[in-house]
Amino acid sequence: MFIKSLTIKNFRCFGKGTDEKGTAINFNNGLTAFIGRNGSGKTAILEALNFLIGSDYLPTRIKEKDFNSDAKEIKDEIVIEGETEKPFFATLDVRSSTNQLETIIIPCNKIKITIKRREKPEKVLDDPFVINKYVLPIVGDIDESIFEEDKKARKASRISQIKEGYTVFYKLKDGQERNAKVISYQLTYNPNRLTKCPKSYYLSKDRDDDVSGNYSLIAKILTDLHWKYKKKQTGGENTISSEYDTLAGSLRDIVDEKSVLINGINEKVKAICCDDKNFQIDFVDIDQPYKSAFVAKKEGEKLLLPDNLGSGFNILIAYALFAYVADQEKTPIVLIIDEPELHMHSDWQKKMYEVFTNQTDLQFVYSTQSENFISLKNWKQIRSISDFQVFPKEEILQEQITATDGQNGTRADYLDDYAAKNLHISAILRENLELFFAKKCVLVEGPSEKYGLPKLLKLSGCVVENFSVSIIPAWGKTKIKNYQMICKVFGIDYFTIYDN
Image 1: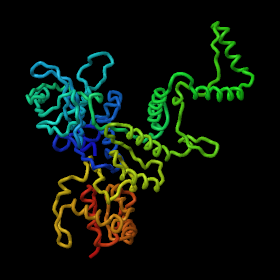
Image 2: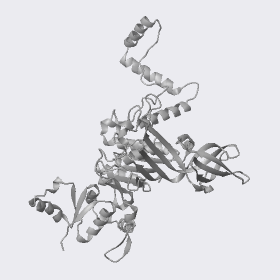
Image 3: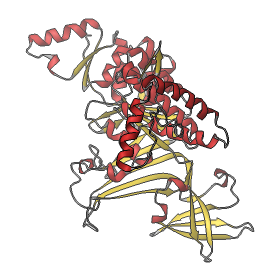
Image 4: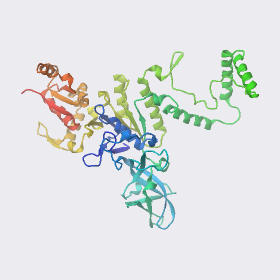
């Protein structure tokens, strides 16, 4: 896990919260799946996280509609803050208390964005919002073991917060202690000054944007490959260039055997500009061979682009591209995906979830409306959103309860027990994971009640199909408590019907 928690305040559907501190969201180690009904705030959480650690240029992304409906005043501001699992480091140039210029490495564990409306214009066509993004140091005594060896910079040994910013203490080689004042503006987010700071890649619902186009991820990768290609090129005879000249010459003879087209172009150009430009038909810019490259699948003699293969391939190719980039990066990578199940067959969904779960080098954060991308075996991965609150809540998980056999434990203990005993296979059927995506659910004993209850209610003038209610059969009265536990922990409204 690279990002430990996220706090959102006044951003879209998330307001100030009951404590005026916003909505706090804890992430699971490795993978976190957000589930909820349409409009519950899943995408808002993903985009807030991407704003925080992604590479988007925020002034072009922030709009008035990003402010919560209750944040109407000029003084109201959006706050997005993330805490990292492990420290990352900011390298700053400061002036010490003895008036010496020093380079200091400062450990940090938080990134924060504040967005507020501009009170008055400062220049023509100024941005309507004031956006600040900065890092927050770890306050207190610093364990020296967290630093890597770097003889060129001082390492902070203690950090204290002051009104203007922070005072950073460090030691000289002879053991003497010095300090320097770090003003808040010096902590402005600058990736070039940060090491080991998590970085995100966001795979939105528009899969095509990442596998094709001038500004897609594949275009950025090909640009990097072109740079590597140019770096490896040597002077003198270029075998690739000579081979291309032979191939291009053959192709030109096929399409313009007597050079009628090319000679005609050159004659007309020369007649106007009085200069022989020697135009020719070409196929690849040999100086930039990767510029026109593309991802394709060979079927017989044909090359098929992703669009020709079906939209489900876009997510697979995009994931492969992101995994490639993450492998090249030297920083922790968080892969954010909005509904990975889009356009994918159920079998592929299950396999992709398994791949995500077993991945250890990336942190995955995604939203989903598919039962195939969650599992009660890994219940700690699931974050359910209801009424703009995120479940499970720690206080509910730590509630002490007594089982029917008299054993005591917390709700978290019992869910761990469900997972350890593989009850997600034997007692809680996969199709019943529908309850996670229901607005309300009715828990019943078995299929007779599931299919009989709607008919009985219809006789009373109540048509269940007109309401967002799911009827979930527990397949046994003794198993109902398992479902009640799940509903209680994940904030699912439920009602239980059974006979004595």
